[in-house]
Image 1 (cartoon, rainbow, N blue to C red):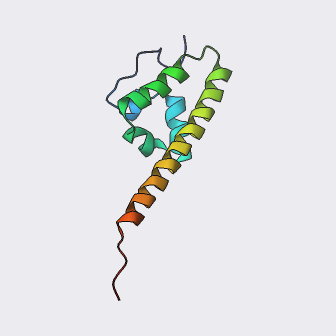
Image 2 (cartoon, helix red, strand yellow):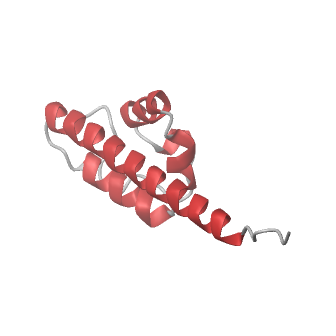
Image 3 (cartoon, rainbow, N blue to C red):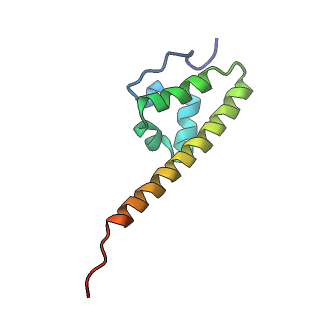
Amino acid sequence: MRPWPAVGEATTRLNMTDIPLDLAIALQQAGLARFFADCTPAHRQEYLKWIGEAKRPETRTVRIEKALQMISAKRAEEESRAKKRAGSRVRPSSV
């Protein structure tokens, strides 16, 4: 028996208990747990399904590492977009 849930066992309502322990630990260590929790249910489910479909523990580890990279890149992209939006709202003061 695998130490992680089978495909489809993850729920759309996210608690850290809904995330397999190995992924939850990796997200916490990478500082991505909050960002992952704030992602859409569909987005989270795709990662959980992809990681959960791994048949070998080695494959699962590689997928978790790749997921962390992709989630980190997504966070950086969203932060960059937010900064650009905030910057465009600032109006120059008249002198």
